[in-house]
Length: 211
Image 1 (tube, rainbow, N blue to C red):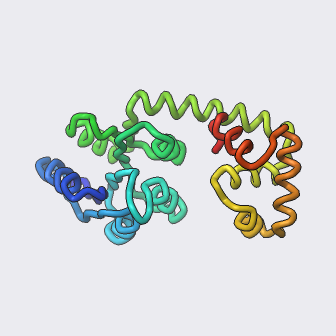
Image 2 (cartoon, rainbow, N blue to C red):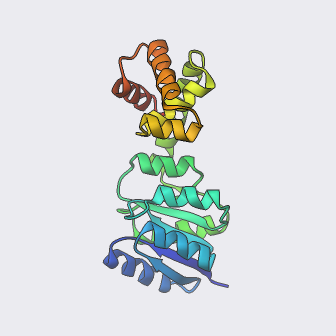
């Protein structure tokens, strides 16, 4: 049985190139192509492929959001992400458990090898990407332990949501508290961490790999 693939990239030329690359190998079958994240997710639901080859920078729904939703729905398809740069989205994908990461400037046959490796239950993550992910996780763990010594669990929750850019009302809605209570939590966070406002909190968290 061939390895069944869904290919997702928002550039038609790249998508065609990916299809030709895999179809030139006897052990692959491309069951669907997608030009945005929403299409990719729908194709995975519909075709239940063995592996999704996913560009992280996608319109409508980005690659990380696709991976998050696949986890939420417990979809068993393996994921190999393609990325042009070793940015935060790539690190987030690794932290979510993606087992394949290939940089776009690598040789095409490395992508083929990565897909075979992930299909077989292994991991293929570029060395530099893996090192950065481990370093970020280490820094995040140390920072969260430091913050947990000062903040309550609810305050930590609020801080993380603010770091993701959520306004006070959205924080309140998610936590099922009033907007006034959310603001009070924020005031306590600023006070305990010695910060002078929302922007300072975001910068504080980003510098520690939490945001």
